[in-house]
Length: 127
Image (cartoon, rainbow, N blue to C red; front, side):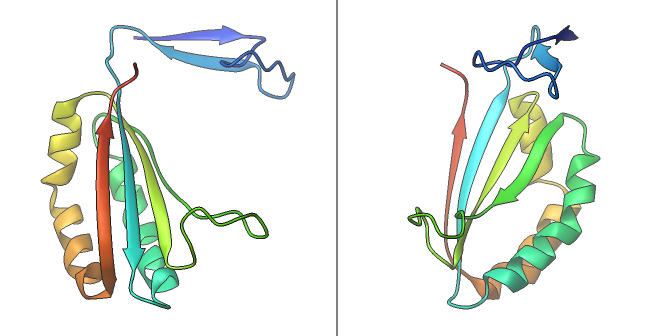
């Protein structure tokens, strides 16, 4: 069940333009940070393939968030020009396991495997 609150943002920041907070009750949400490094100069190509797969992932049962992020231009880079981080939130480990076993993720892996240099996947839960 999702409880909706209005008027404040988690973390104590109040902004009238962000009036809704979603609180997930009775769900032990799973967080994933996947740090993916493409071969030199191949990140844009990998991200294009990634973005094409995003609608299929968003349609999966239990997907709360699934997005790719990169270093902010002009800031001290945390990861560098060939790396991006996939930020994921899932309702359960079962949903994450189903995601990992899905046909569209297997197809994505086949399309990008020759373009990748490294990957580290961290599966986390709130403390």
